[in-house]
Length: 363
Ligand code: PMV
Image (cartoon, rainbow, N blue to C red):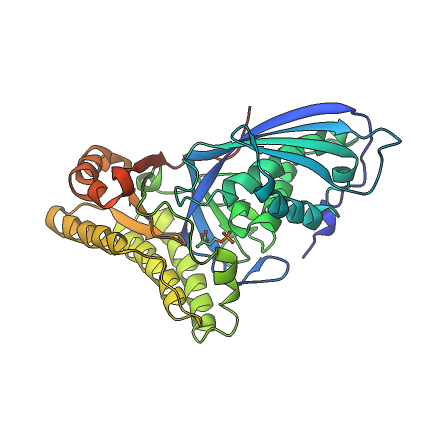
């Protein structure tokens, strides 16, 4: 894999002080990534809808170190929602070390990072995808200003996705939209294990402006982190079948997204969600991230669909929350359904209405 292209060789140290702010979204996978090898190479290809309302806004202030301050260290301060956050620092420090080879300017500047999420902290919505992609976009803005050659937007997005992936795999899918594929797959032109690419084919009308209501079943800290979950796919009895299944599902969903076969979409997306959780149930040590209310919601969705002919369906990420996916033309009726029958299964009746979006925005 050609990662050399991401090592900059035309940088000038021409800027002493600058600042960039980016807003980047979360995403929800339709075909799931679960299992990887070093350095953050996925065992199968995945595809996600980019969201819009669930996002992170990050500002990085860069100040060039003076000659006396110059060292080879990465120096930064981190503020989350206005408060200094020492406990988030190790994860970001590790991320910066991982990408230093590709971002040598990280040691030239001291950085002050201010970050905030649109969704409540510990809502169970993973903030790593939006958080890491926002940092990656700020770094690419700096790199663009330092570069003596013109960097195209295509390259900036590609490298930002490449960098974000090294922070959190799914973050590679949070730079662009509305659908992003990450992982090399024969049916997806331009796809790669080291960065995400926008789904390269024309998408059927029915899948445009898709809605995602995120039902907050459990806002607590997960008992098992996704990095532990990924690791448990090594020596997992069903690992190779799972990776084959995901790659086959990616081939199928590529056709479905183009031909608009929404019944096949529902079947595939729900099967993917349950297959992901089946991997958790059959890991050793085994674990369960779904809660009783996760199952109540799934059953209510199935009942509603069979009673009304609705095209609503669900997916899950690595947690108890349920993502309720539905086409734009059902938005009114599904919101009523959620208010009447599903919100009672959420903590404090809380859910977030989201819609598919186009990716990172510079502020
Ligand atoms: O990016 P990570 O390491 O947090 O893993 C994300 C895994 C899932 O959310 C469960 C699936 C996916 O493809 O986003």
